[in-house]
Image (tube, rainbow, N blue to C red; front, side, top):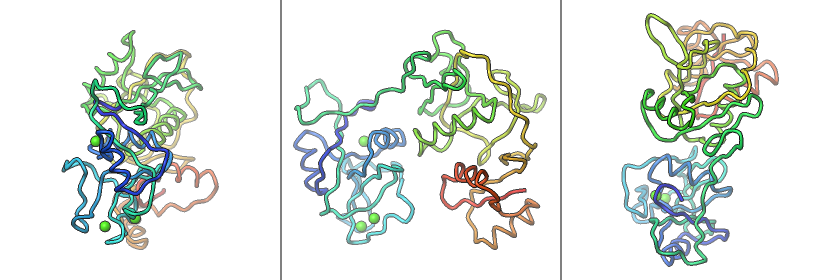
Length: 321
Ligand SMILES: [Ca+2]
Ligand SMILES: [Ca+2]
Ligand SMILES: [Ca+2]
């Protein structure tokens, strides 16, 4: 159950029409993805591709949701939709949650959704539910970083930074939780890794860094800013809280090089991830003229892993000085 909707995920494969009929026979319909929250919810609960209630059967290239909603999100996988007249039914990949246009007459697993009601569901329609991440030390709704004993809560609700800070305080019984401050590189890696696996399609989270003309950059919880990792300018959007320290914070690793705003330090180099696309030559000369740097050259396995960790969006160019 997500908000006031109930979901059913099949363990059998059906064609899109048969799958839709199955849903309709249970007072439901194939899932229409109306928001990133719903996208993330469904994606987190599947491990194989499923048919969704999206199709361009009526008018080639005009994709419509079964619930007739408009103005929702778009999340096609790279190169999709690619099936022109042969693929007119939508499906979502279990791996990255992206969408694929698929053959309407070729069976896949599928997902149904319906409004929650007081009427008991028929036994065949078992709604799925997410088990909130749970840690005994941190309590319900919080995840625990076992390396540091710190607790984290990620919110998918969009709010401004101060509302997010209030939300964090309310989430924690002792009122000690604050917006996330990424005090060490290890913490950055831990949080990044968690977000990458759990909230893949969420592109930005609010964190607790403040910038004021007189004070420079500081974290809302007053821990010192020891490194920068801005990504595409300032983070904005959803909230991430960190709570209760169960152990004293681990000592900071040796500082990374001071990189200009917008650059990411790693192993004594600074990296810049562009959000514009260009040809290789175009990118190279852009690096040289605008940034006095060059396209990233990959010199060892560690550097390759570092770059692979950060390149999750399509068509990014990498720069390095
Ligand atoms: Ca929906
Ligand atoms: Ca089509
Ligand atoms: Ca396709």
